[in-house]
Amino acid sequence: MATLLALCAPAAALLVLLALAPLLALPPHLPRLAELESWPAELWLLAGGGVLGTTAGLLDWRLHRRGERRIPRAEHRAELFALALGVPLFALLAAASVARDPAPFLVPIVAVALAMAAAIAYDETRFHRTCTRYETALHRVLVGGEGLAFLAWLHWCYAGGPRG
Image (tube, rainbow, N blue to C red):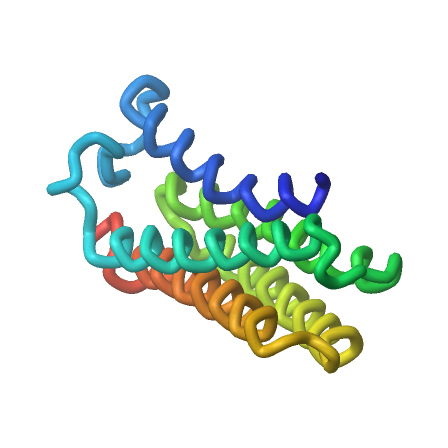
């Protein structure tokens, strides 16, 4: 259950952040959830990548819950660690999104992203040699979708985004 929560927490938190932006007097450069015309291209890419990645993660979670592949304790810990790194990554990206100057957040964001990439690489190379093609495809869509979402958010925040 912890894996499911770690998988879904960033997506749910982003929706809550955008929904509450008008009520919390967050900076006006944040797109409004209900005003789709205010969404920049990066937010559409973030949403698309996030939906793809999260859906693949949910399908993989369901595959394991049905007992089609038993997960050893060490693999579960490695996967949970990689997923849990999404929480500080989300917090840093959210803080950078609302900050007047996001520059101080860049190095910590990249550091957490690199740690997450290392954890994913460890998990994939150490435990997933026996996965079926379907499960391997789910892992690739999960990582690729979430990677696209991360890069879109990073670009919005630092290159093209909220402050012009």
